[in-house]
Amino acid sequence: MKLPFTVEQFLQVFKNYNNAIFPMQIVFYLLALTIIFLSIKKSKGTDKIINSIIAFFWLWMGIIYHMIFFTTINKAAYLFGGFFIIQAMLFFYYGVIKQRLSYSFTQNIFGILGLLLIIFALVVYPLLGYVYGHMYPLAPTFGAPCPTTIFTFGVFLLSETKLVKIVLIIPFLWSLLGFSAATNLGIKEDTALLIAGFLTTAILLFRKPNVQTVQS
Image (cartoon, rainbow, N blue to C red; front, side):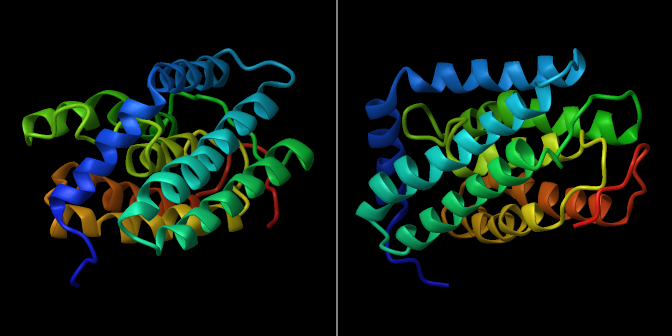
């Protein structure tokens, strides 16, 4: 598939984005660490905080990354941004208002896989980018769509209940679309996005939760 922009233009978007939002990248990491902490030290109200943070991530990506920066080289980013905003609303509605999205780290295969995806998004992804020659600021950072979607899949795997299926749709579709960057733009670290998307979706659609089931 022929893209409407070059690799150089794509990487320049990241440079413009990273330079413009600094030091928000640090804030994103602090928020991610907050999610990890709250999923381990779970208490009343932590699920609302976790879902509010994830909703903020997706709202930020929809408005700031897609609609403000990515649209400078690809007008389809307005559509992408719209879907990301919808995903943020889904997190807020089902996670904060309806309280149907609950997370807690448990020492089982799902919790371990979830934690591994989270660590990959926060640590391994940027390290792989460095290995492949994507130096900051010409590189996707946490808070941009692909690493943050991998992080989201990791949080999904920490779910205590059967995940509301509708919240899986947009992240899974983005894992397919975002993977095109790995093949067409040389962002090889995005290969993990496709793996995370299929792995997480398959697990969450078929596994039986350890606690009460939430029907979607």
